[in-house]
Length: 177
Ligand SMILES: CC(C)(COP(=O)(O)OP(=O)(O)OC[C@H]1O[C@@H](n2cnc3c(N)ncnc32)[C@H](O)[C@@H]1OP(=O)(O)O)[C@@H](O)C(=O)NCCC(=O)NCCS
Image 1 (cartoon, rainbow, N blue to C red):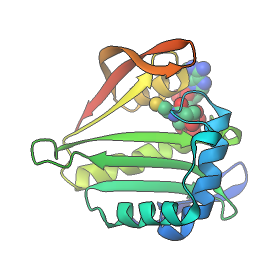
Image 2 (image 1 turned 30 degrees about the vertical axis):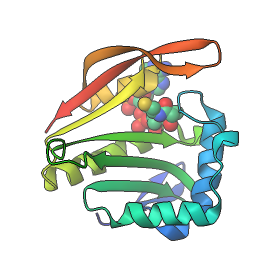
Image 3 (image 1 turned 45 degrees about the vertical axis):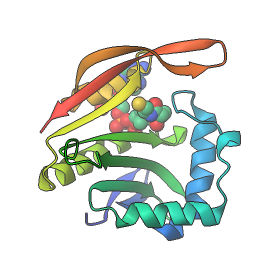
């Protein structure tokens, strides 16, 4: 995937694969987005990796040819990430799941739509035949985005997510390529 730059909020934002040198910025990013929303699986205190561990994780991730881990950056910090991974066994290799997040300051600016478009292009070129995801049924912004990009609701799972005292329903959404 070739890096490219878009202008959002008067800033040049580059979208490119994440690399191990991004480890420290990635940890800062995870802590920020983890505390900005409860639609993600973690909060900042649950990010316990140190920079070396993060670097190793990203080094391994960047070696995989069946996955795409993208970030958006304005050069000072990470503004968004999208992580798509195919199944590891031949039985599942034709499909993959992704997760996406954007820093709150940039919600509603089209960044997630641009990154998903890049993922769809990459997936088509890499023989992926199906993309799926799970999303809390009350995450209206994300559901609107996924549906507007062709994903449909394929099922619903009870007790998919947990926050102290509350279980949440999740939709399983999918897109055939
Ligand atoms: C969900 C998320 C990734 C979307 O990123 P984003 O950059 O804001 O998305 P975009 O700007 O590309 O698109 C958002 C769309 O939702 C719409 N939208 C905004 N608020 C909405 C709401 N409350 N209900 C329905 N649609 C809404 C916007 O109008 C836009 O649609 P449009 O392009 O048709 O106008 C981002 O909000 C985020 O990181 N949220 C927290 C983490 C998260 O929920 N991740 C997904 C877990 S499954």
